[in-house]
Image 1 (cartoon, protein in one colour):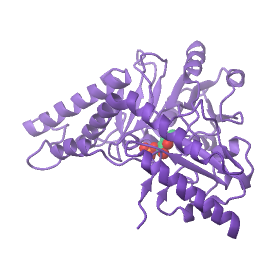
Image 2 (cartoon, helix red, strand yellow):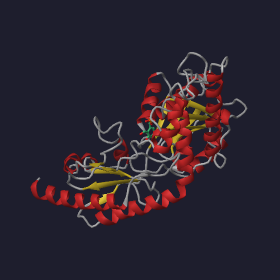
Image 3 (cartoon, protein in one colour):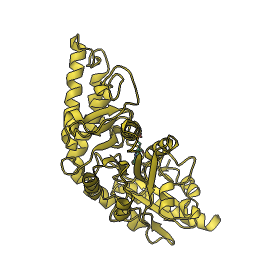
Amino acid sequence: MKKLIYLDYASTTPVDERVLEKMNNYLTIDGIFGNPSSYSHLFGIKAKESLERARNNIANIIGSKPNEIIFTSSATESINLAIKGTVTISNNIKRHIITNVSEHKSVLSTCSYLEKLGIKITYLNNSNIGLIDLNILEKKIKNETILISIMHINNEIGIIQNIEKISEICKEKNIIFHVDATQSVGKYPLNLKNINIDLLSFSAHKFYGPKGIGVLYIKNKFNKIQIKPLIHGGGQEKGIRSGTLPVHQIIGMSTALSIAQTEMKMEIIRIKKLKKQLWDGLRNIKDIYINGNFCNCSPFILNIGFKNIFNKILMSELNNIAISSSSSCTSNTQTSHVLKSLGLTEKLIQSSVRFSFGRFTTKQDIDLTIEHIQYAIKKIRKYY
Ligand code: PLP
């Protein structure tokens, strides 16, 4: 049987054993399973103490204050809360949002929902490598602009937006800046002490934590940023996100983030080598190119176009290698809006494949991947 190789880490990551071990202490009768809102007994108090320690740790790592962290169920929920929450609480004048055509669907679908409610949305276009033109961004700002929402690292092509410069523009114009950092937190350096971000969304399952837990960071700007809750109930998380807090998930997220932070420097060096190894092993194949750009890009993502090769056929030939044709949220139903934003034709979009690397990717995995792809391409070009 062929070895199974996982190269879809941008979609999700497995839970690290060290994380699972910690989480297991927060589930059963022998562990700290209490409801952190039950202050009347020790079970609840212990859970609350553990929860707040985890919040402190997460805040410390991302460079925020603990009271700026709101726990949610996912990055999707954090993004919904950030965008809907700011715009629906604002007055009738501030009703314009700026975002980018290649944002994740959780941003784009939220914006299109708001558009139907009468909110004006400007969708910025990209250059052919996926970068926003900041001069155009500045020109699109109006008096009514309340929020700019731009992702840090794109999940399909890995391009890194200049969020430092965008944050300066937002600060100068007094506009709320939301960053979808789902592909960067835990993987790529980002510290809120060094950059003026007002709202930041991410989730644990992208850095070897569990699925089902996310964070929305809300900058504590003398209560200037107000967020209208999406969920009403027991008033947890300062009333911004009701619902009993999943302490085991939060402990998992905190542990996973600590490990990721400690290992980040070495991991980036290791993964950069693997990405280069893959590209060097494939680049001589006829009619192959990178979508986006190799340099201004996350080391964890490589999106390759194989001209005249239908990606669905290539992926079925590589059935022991987990890769994807676009983001996991769109791959089954639509072609990639991100690749479209680079100006690619439908045919080229359907010839593209995303490889994403992670903690358990080895040099041998890449050797095998190169071998399988070279064989598959020869076969497809001969028989199809
Ligand atoms: N934003 C980006 C850039 C992503 O890659 C993803 C997930 O793939 C999300 C948002 C949504 O994250 P979640 O799965 O935690 O809802």
